[in-house]
Image (tube, rainbow, N blue to C red; front, side, top):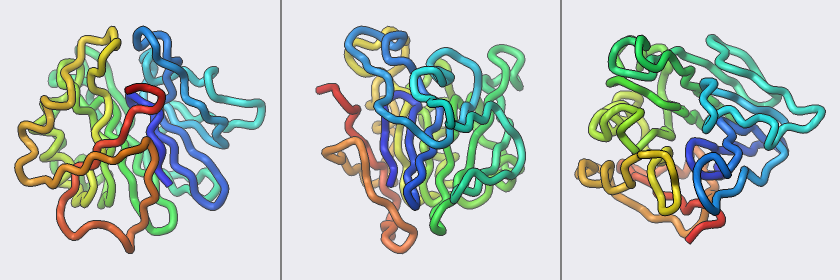
Length: 220
């Protein structure tokens, strides 16, 4: 199961274990936002920016926290690979680097692209490996242009692209709204899901490319 907690925060649940990526604290995003309602077993932090690293908002005494870890490792039933990518178009000289995570469980591979700052290169795509589902920033400004987001998902072989990290009403971050991505998604079938979580499996992946828009929890 994949659950969106808003912004860049996603939760994967498999075999009774929960893995959360990039928690925010709610309030720092703007008025009326709440922190993730989750108590995960594992937390992955892609980089140390305040809207991605609010571990204290979700972690309990037994929560395993992994920050910006490159390479392959295992967290319970989750097989994880971290790949370092630049947070800007200048090779990391402006905003540093992020770690994109590929998480595999039950044969399904999910890639969280964090704040990818430049088009994904061929070598970077090979290092990340095949992805069934890609979670990708759609708000431009601090991240790669939306057109390159779609190209990255295609390069990874994704059947499902879930947009994240875009502007919604009340947000203080100067991001673009989701339309910035949708206007370029001509080769993707857009599906607006009524909730913030969805059951996914490799066996039930769509045959075409689907851009799956989840509902931000707790907001209209």
